[in-house]
Amino acid sequence: MTTIIIIGTGSLARHWFDAFMEHDNLKVVQVLGRNKNALAYYGQTTGTSADLGSIQDADIYINAVRDDAIYAICQGLTIKGKLIVHCSGSLDISAMPAHNRRGVLYPVQTFSEGRKVDFREIPICIESENERDLKFLHGLANQLSGKVFKVSSTQRRNIHLAAVFVNNFTNYLYGIGEEICKENGLPFTILDPLIKETAAKIGEVSPKKAQTGPARRLDTGTINKHLELLKQKSYHEIYAVLSKSIEQTYSEGTGRATPER
Amino acid sequence: MTTIIIIGTGSLARHWFDAFMEHDNLKVVQVLGRNKNALAYYGQTTGTSADLGSIQDADIYINAVRDDAIYAICQGLTIKGKLIVHCSGSLDISAMPAHNRRGVLYPVQTFSEGRKVDFREIPICIESENERDLKFLHGLANQLSGKVFKVSSTQRRNIHLAAVFVNNFTNYLYGIGEEICKENGLPFTILDPLIKETAAKIGEVSPKKAQTGPARRLDTGTINKHLELLKQKSYHEIYAVLSKSIEQTYSEGTGRATPER
Image (tube, rainbow over all chains, first blue to last red):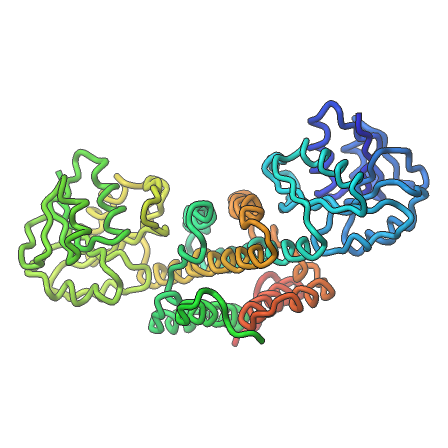
């Protein structure tokens, strides 16, 4: 039986909790968080507390709070020499104080409240300061997901950077698409099959090969007509910068590489 | 029985053909195209010709060639007074000469060779010069897809613009993600569940509400670290421009609107 304490009550904490609960040999003994309303969700099946000082004993402590709160929360805990992990893509393992054994469990996924995700499909990146803890983290992650990756802090930081492009920026482009539809009296759902197919096909075709569109075929006429349609300065700029980059990538004929800055 | 002639043999032509073939009351009587190898695919089940002059009689002619070839191909056809449609998102209905009855059948989807797509899920935008032809196009499109939209040329042009954002640009961001993974010795598949979930959740949560990431929370520290990691000038620029736009959208607190240019 592995005992687990979760610190934090946000969307990520909840997804960890739900995933652990599906395994009989994993036991969440306590959830700690300032938000008493949020604690209610966990209180039916495990111990909860809004007081960090009441922290109990466990095999692993999951620090699932916001990046900028991780260090302070760790400092406020009375535990010493215990295995504690954060779940951040961008922070070093040393973003936690050294009086505990430090590690990372970074799930490469976006978590929204109320949306179930299949944890077995989520890549989990692990990191630790020693082999024994790494083995433990691997065993734990492996029970939740079939996709466990041992990565360095540098690799993890780059995965997070890549995730910003394919998740945060992509979602923002979806939002621009939605706005254009609304402004023209069209339902956003008209783009839904296109969005889904664009995402679905990358498993079969490399994005580099799948690239199409006006910029890919150097269709200046269409590009200029589109730029004219875009009245908002920032969308105009996004369209221009992305089109320029696509043109460069494909006109050089030397792969995606563009000049170093 | 509706008789159909397809002009063109590319990916779009093939997807139309396959979709029509699934309906007993739709008959593709001829496929015309310059590429004799490509014609072979159709030759087993319908008449084919590389000679535009041999065009036969049909209820509708589908001009599925590249945007910049549409006008010239129409000019080269000997038919007059017939219903002919192009399938372009960006071209006006008047992009074809007026000696035929002109229309548009624009499927809002990306077609890749070798990838089956469910045509019943594809939104089809229709447009024509008169009510009778519009009714005919609606009937035809409705047999293939449950999602038929009567749109103006202006609306269609804006759907195409939105499609560039959610398909072409998004795919390019996927490509940047792939490159970052490869440069750091990681498989691109590590981003796959994230990409799929980002696309999947837009049906349930508006992209505006779903927005997360460093720019959304005005996390300048992470943004600057990411910019440092990006050695390629154009990717650096894309990251900066998108982050700036996201920051503007969410810091103004007045919805997505950004200043007019």
